[in-house]
Length: 154
Image (spheres, rainbow, N blue to C red):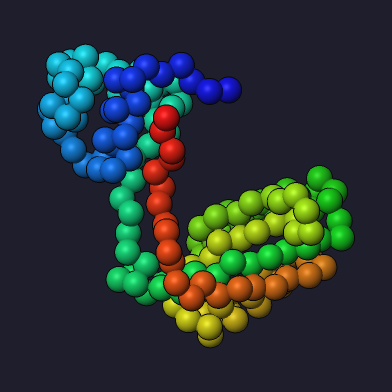
């Protein structure tokens, strides 16, 4: 369900998505609203779940995990216990930065960050030792053309 947001809320969100480190004073200046009114709107959006959190975007190269890998998984089973195990395995592996259940030919797509191909091989071996999978393949990202956390705000 889409949240009911007015133009000022959307402006606040646009500012926060580009730089969540700004103070309430800086945000209120950018959206032409008083500090207190801006703060109240931000708190309300947090309470309603529109704003889920504020995070730091770390540089993968600087942290030793420059290689991004898209891991495609197919499973022969879709039983609830298998799915629960899959969720636990995914949660326990910090290399997995995104996990998605898919429609179409794939069952799951994982976004994985590792240091290099050898790091991916270690990840692969760890994953298949923890989880029965019918098919797993990977594609290595050669170039990140666009990477953003900002959602399109109309």
